[in-house]
View 1 (cartoon, helix red, strand yellow):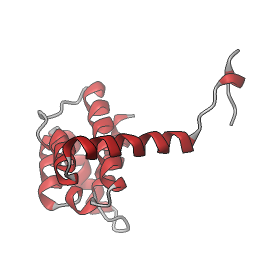
View 2 (view 1 turned 90 degrees about the vertical axis):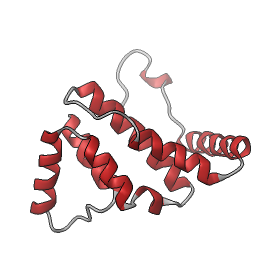
View 3 (view 1 turned 135 degrees about the vertical axis):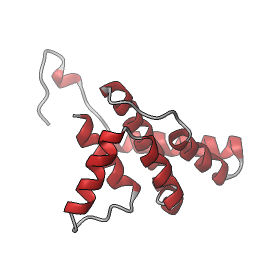
Length: 131
């Protein structure tokens, strides 16, 4: 990987270490709360019970970050069905500004190849919109 700057050769990222730390965090959460469902519900609630977004870049960026974190935890515990439920998708969609709602609907109608019933597709769309 190409690194710029005077300290570029000192910068490294160990993906295995990051995964290991993530697994330790999940173990801590499970230990503290006892039941996986409680932690999963808390993560989903963090993105479904938040206030509606506005078109400011910071608002969408924060929501994308929160959604990505939520998705990471859910995927790690293999409970994607909770995140991909119609209720969750509808709740997240309703929090989007009307302009983004309209753009997302247009994209769904135009693109027959992708499965937009998955949460990760909505997050992908938001990431692209935030740029």
